[in-house]
Image 1 (cartoon, rainbow, N blue to C red):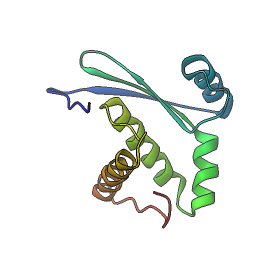
Image 2: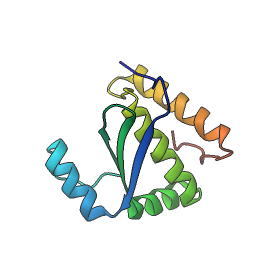
Image 3: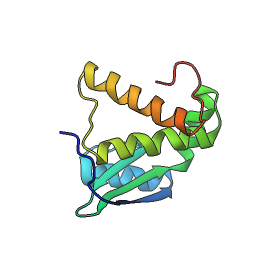
Image 4: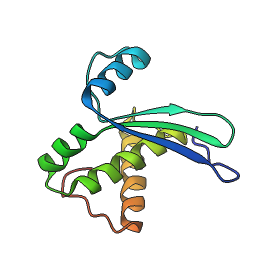
Length: 117
């Protein structure tokens, strides 16, 4: 169930590397693999924490043909949506998360490469 904060909220973002994302993914999700972003739900006014692999940001930006800052923005929005309770386990959920992500990036004047979402 998605939630919207009633008051001001905080999110902490840690920009790190593949090694730490792999360790966190193994430790907290039981998956021994590198991922681009992980979300850790907080409490109270702190929505939670995001960990983002900058190496993955650069690789994915090159793969899809847009700027690293755009890929970073996409991962921040994606992680924030998870903190708010959104998921992408079903096709309908994936479509809605993609729609919300595109809307957020559009309002920030970030343009995703075709096919990224």
